[in-house]
Amino acid sequence: MPRLALFALDLVAVSVLVFALYFPRHRRRDLVVAYLGVNVGVLAVAGSLSSSTVGAGLGLGLFGVLSIIRLRSTELDQHEVAYYFSALALGILGPLSGGSVWLAPSLMALILLVIYLGDHPRLFRSYQRQVMVLDNAVVDRVALVAQLERILGARVHKATVERVDLVNETTVVEVRYSYSQKARLLEGASR
Image 1 (cartoon, rainbow, N blue to C red):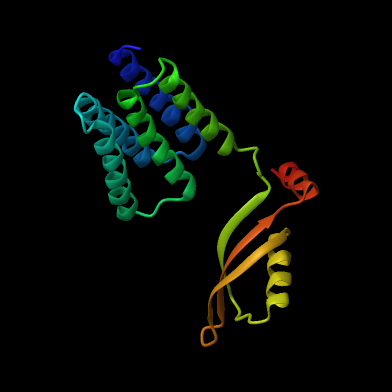
Image 2: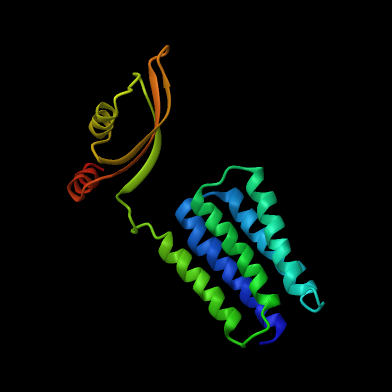
């Protein structure tokens, strides 16, 4: 496949990733710019290095350096990290593919498909995670889970206490929970 066609394919793939998958689902404008900029930057650098003898190794090194710099600069949710690495991988795939004509397009499509399915809103939609601050100090695990289930109206799968403050009577806890089908139906009916 001609190089310009691979570059165009990358731009189409990253546009689908950002504008059809990420932004409609998560609405974080600042990361749209980051994903596009990183993808096009990596595409440009990898494209210019692909003709040299150190292209693939240098491209993968660039992938690692960019990911370390970006991931240390701000806190990202895990799904945002997945989109970030997908944008990086798409930028590297086009220029550095030396195999079959359909290898790079197939891998780009695979990345998009995995992100589409893995981040689909219907996948595990009843499962939630949040950090809660309770207005009492709870040190008994059974009592903590019972209190969280009562507050959330959901089944608690995991409760990790991050901090108990006996002076100010607070408990900070990370909770992983799920709503039952009945609770989701009642919640939907009340809206």
